[in-house]
Structures are given as structure tokens and as C-alpha cells.
Image 1 (spheres, rainbow, N blue to C red):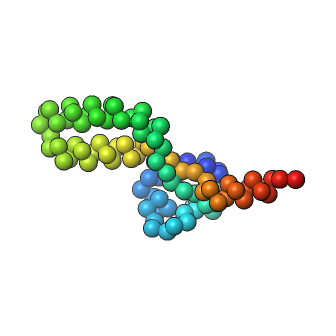
Image 2 (cartoon, rainbow, N blue to C red; image 1 turned 120 degrees about the vertical axis):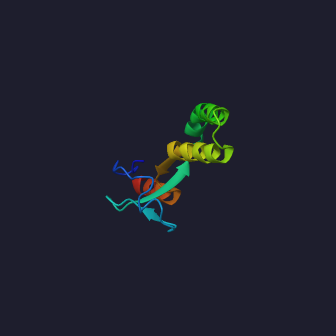
Image 3 (tube, one colour; image 1 turned 60 degrees about the vertical axis):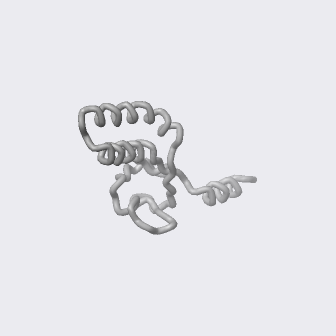
Length: 97
């Protein structure tokens, strides 16, 4: 995942992403960031992941394990970072003449 402010790469398992704080900040530029689930990316990856789950179940792997793996993969590819709404409104009002 990349910071929307400075394009700094932030890992999914990093301290920033796994904190329970309401307001997260980029470790590089110290600007606020917010994570969200990108539904477009999730829908693009949905079919291949379901096919993987079906194939894994047919070769004898446990349905619970393959289900957890497929949900984990889907979350890894579909979670993105964005600028929080409050900051977007503040930037828009600051740019007005």
C-alpha cells in the first residue's frame, strides 16, 4: 500500500496499519491516512479466488483453512489507503480565492 500523500510504501503488517488508533498517520510524511476496502479490486479478484478455493477443496484441503486463505488474499489485494474526508474538505476550502 502506498501513502496517498507521498507514495511511501506502507506494509500491510506494519505498526501503522495494525494500530488501534482512530487517526493513523504515514510514518514518512506524518500526514493522516485512512484504510478502506476497494470494492472494484475485490470484485476483480473475487472469481479467481473462488476458483482457487474450489480447486483447493477438491484436492482434499480443509474447507476452513482454504476459506481463511481466500479471505486473507482478498483482503491483502483489496485494502487501499486514502486521505480522510475531513482533510479533503479542509484542503478544498483553503484553495478557494
